[in-house]
Image 1 (tube, protein in one colour):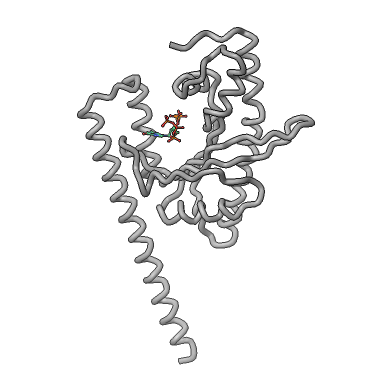
Image 2 (image 1 turned 120 degrees about the vertical axis):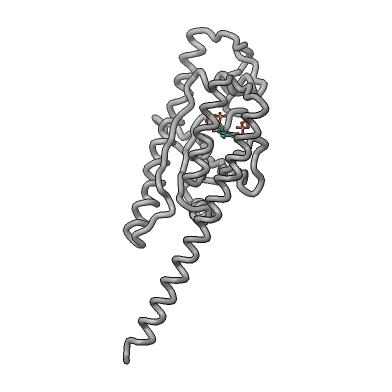
Length: 225
Ligand code: 0O2
């Protein structure tokens, strides 16, 4: 049960979201900059698409309660920022697992934000079967006259991982977090199947690259003949 915050508390919570919204807007532009820059240069981008959102006040309250924040207690709004790390969330979706690693590397080189933490749910999937790489970044915003650093969670996923997570999230919501055991098992199996597909696709891509190199070498070798 969520304690009902006062109207003025809700207004403060709503104001708290503003710099996070700005961080999302700016980060979206930057991630799209990577996408279009790569497309321009190589005719291929490791980023397929980018989406971003700021959690709704309702959803922030729910997560804060889950993380043990006493809604309405002294400084509870400040507490929220110390416990809820995905008020600002970005999702970068790729075609291949290899591309996730490439984007991860590119983001690690950036000087406009600081990476605080990386959680690799591909190397170590969640109990549910969930796979993604989560990068927690500290991003400086200049909102009004003040500088404020906010945390953003960037989720890196393949199309297949995203397909699975979107369906699982919807089911989890429909069942109010109480998924029947058989459904949980079926979802875990589906997550593994999606991962097998991902690995197969990565292999196809390596095969295509090898074939292209062979053709190029053959063309070079025959240039002067
Ligand atoms: P929404 O609606 O996407 O914002 P946790 O205590 O695990 O709930 P925590 O500590 O922040 O949350 O952990 P984590 O792993 O960083 O999870 C944050 C987000 O990752 C979630 O946000 C989901 O978006 C995604 N995620 C994590 N685990 C799963 C999973 O098993 N299935 C799916 N579909 N998504 C997952 P929210 O706030 O839960 O949801």
